[in-house]
Length: 443
Ligand SMILES: Cc1ncc(COP(=O)(O)O)c(C=O)c1O
Image 1 (spheres, rainbow, N blue to C red):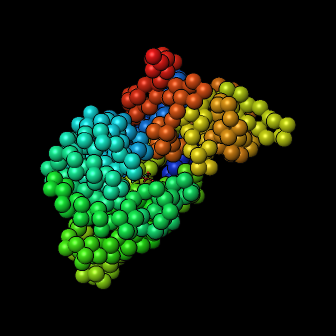
Image 2 (spheres, helix red, strand yellow):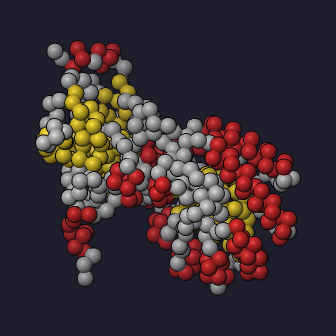
Image 3 (cartoon, rainbow, N blue to C red):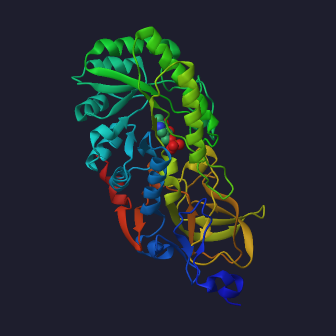
């Protein structure tokens, strides 16, 4: 039997694609059965850069930016950099016309180092320091999202010139894929309470250098039902109308945060952008008519939905073994240090062998990492070849968001490199962290 007997489509000349919901569109099995991404063989990258290795498809990130800009032509789209930020990523998204949403002085510094125009940057965060606010005001970032009245005290002490602000509110909407990533309800640490809003509006009004231009909310992450955003629009336009009526201030911007769900495994629900656009347009029509309020400009802050599917992580299998309970494990050379999402949120992933087609007998296998914790699992009970061997490379799709940015050096293991692929070529944009890097911090 040859590979062509198992997979006749390989002989048809047409490249065989992998599940488009979780892999970038330009991911194929080549004629030898190995996976290529952006025209580059994944096993070649594993050999060249070692494993674990994050691979990033530049074209997919650019494509997602364009999808947002064409679906929401009247909105301002700012990429939530916390999902994944390197100078290269900041360059790609801003070249496509998307702004950048940062949440710390470090992210702001990376954005500025990448040459992002400050007016296209939004700074948010529920605990900004005076230094961070000073740097942001000095750089003249486009918007600062105020999360507490204490921040207004700090901002008022800075020599600001027409620094535009948004007020973050909790709209009282519980949405999101896991309790740890729900932020829009009324019992969270984010945003100002309804009673603090009046004081905030007055203090900003008296400040001189600060100008309140709109409201902000972020409901949570992995939200696939667009109606939650429609409800947020209705509630926040009502708040904007109340601010107009009580303070005579007409706000013109409404930032709905991010949180748009992506599929991590085939069959997972994801947020449909066209449906979201319809829901938002309807909600704005109704809410603005009801409160006789001029239509505000929307800001959207997708993070995961821009970069998640662009990322694939490569691991090498170190051992294949069965435990007393009869469960087969594939132990790989990465794990919770490069992907803490399984332990943090119970996230579920798929994995495939990068160097050969998914054919022949398969066996239920749990892919586990090399870290000293039982919870260090990458994929539970997935189908992998019955003859899987140590030394083979596994590819885990949809690992572009909150992987590199959440990675740690737990167990003294340096963080993986990021290799970007595009049009058949590749380049390392972040190198592997070495033991020397770890030792270099010690004084
Ligand atoms: C204020 C804000 N905006 C945007 C995002 C991006 O969320 P996501 O990556 O789920 O789109 C987050 C994530 O936590 C956030 O806190």
